[in-house]
Amino acid sequence: MKLQDFSTETERDVGALPASHREETAAARLQLLSETRHRLAIYTPVLGNDSYASTEELAQFRRIAISGRGAQIRILLHDPAAALRNDHRLIALAQRLPSAMQIRTPVEEADLAYGSACLLNDVGGYLFLPEANRPQGRAARHDRVAHAPLQQHFDEVWERSQRASMLHTLDI
Image 1: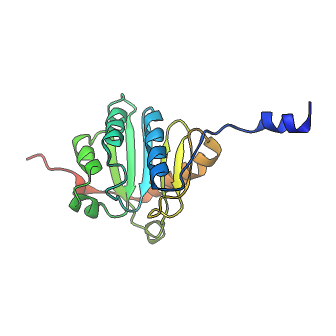
Image 2 (image 1 turned 180 degrees about the horizontal axis):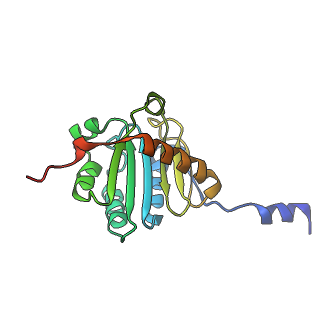
Image 3 (image 1 turned 90 degrees about the vertical axis):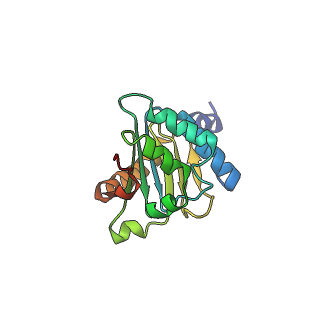
């Protein structure tokens, strides 16, 4: 066996997805949402109207939310009031499915200064945008090695964050 053949065999196939401009990033988001089984984590400082708002994306969120007992969609959002003011479609869906969709807001300065965004699914897929306001980053369908530190960071911030109570509807 030649050295070249060996290196090809040992490379991991992580299912890399292109994410270098708006259309590719949107396609990667949809791909990762469609491959999610029951659990999803999203960290986004700002929820823009062009992210997580398409009919296809919202259908995937709904599918995940009603996928069974273990269904859990966790969203970290720096400014939930702005998303509410802008009538973001994902907020409306979260209000209809509060048992499966939870939104929290970071409270510590270091967490609020974090300017990156990520989407993490339960099959090792991720989309990471180093600058949340720019649709350029990296994504993969199943790369647990790159997924793990992003998930750890998300979980740590989630634990320190507060429930975004302003988004919950009142039953009167």
